[in-house]
Image (tube, rainbow, N blue to C red):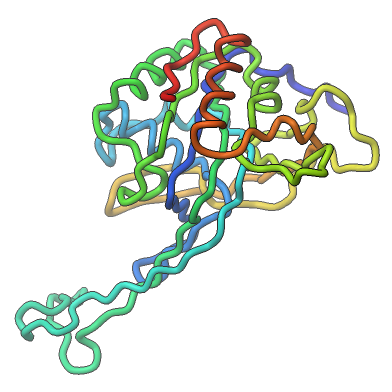
Length: 277
């Protein structure tokens, strides 16, 4: 049996929450899907925008990152129906690949776009090139272009960068959770997703549960090229693990959660970001 790789010693803590977010995986023009969790390509794109990278520019440093995501609130899937070209004069309808104009019943195109509504995630970004983390953190504090969660219509709500911290996977498990627990609950199940094995998560083994050491599936979200005319992605293994955590780690929503988050970062990290009240 191979020896597990050591846990990363430094990483970025991110809060990915918004009224709407969308993390496309297999979407095309007419069908824009969303994965149920933030994808590698989406987070790499977020960092690239913050750094001021144009589409088609080199992202070799970014594709080395590793992403681990905690699902605070899974949200609900929302479908938005768009129409393109309807009610316009023939000269202004949608142009086909051959350069012609659509006519009659084909002049209006329907587009189905899917979002996660009211979802919230906490994420850790690590890399073997730890010197890159500081520049990524600074870019998120002062982004070149506004950050968004999967699509430009989905700006983040509240703080995005929580900090550059030691032992980031420990904090990912222990940070306050942005959800309400039932009054009589003593524990809650929290789902984690990652592009690396998740058997390092948690303080103690949980017998009888999947330890996240083997892939739970596959997802095509590892970017090769973001150029608008030759976007390309490769498949990678998807790891998933559910941890049973104390219910008192759930701190509700809005101001109550943000206050608990700020208190945690002040007590347990050396350089917390400013969390608005």
